[in-house]
Length: 289
Image (cartoon, rainbow, N blue to C red):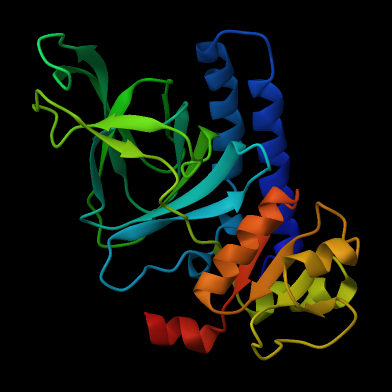
């Protein structure tokens, strides 16, 4: 049974709003993260909301990160992570807290570290291993602000994990230390904002009924051929939907080249539309795979 885009989008938004409400509570971060982890696990258990075709593997890569819901202030963003063997990251931290919850497939190992600055040199420091957490379906790990972690996926089948962050991974304005390995004694830095995660992919069967009934809208960009016709199909730019006074919580499906879609999505998120998806036909998805 196909789960339409409206049902998926409503679940993503409900969880994201819960995350944001908890984050606004005046309580210690550890208590907030415990509650947010429960929200994310509840969403992760609904694996039917995350069809594998929605998160296509880019050829030649071990996975990817896909944005599910985002707000203008960039707080409480939710993503889906796809991983295969070879999806790893060296020790790094995020601008705020992070939570990983398993949805389906195999496992992702997260090793957590505490940071200790060494004043003998400007970029001298070391990491102290805090623990290792294997995250599979129904399992989660929370990573407090300032804690470093590595990830390692070993699986020949798709591994899907929900990720939630206190701040979007591409929010500009932060210089974060990075290490080449857990044993390194010096660190470099990376400026946030250079990485723009792609959107979740939808196909015709995911959106046909919801577009026809006005539960979602289609925006055709850059002269691309329309997928459907009807009163809920628009042509133009991100500003077209503002001019049409589309309700902010309406799922929006973009049609166009990847670069144009990402640029339009960025403008729509900033305008207060939290639920943006990209259309890709089943035929083009099969060709890419």
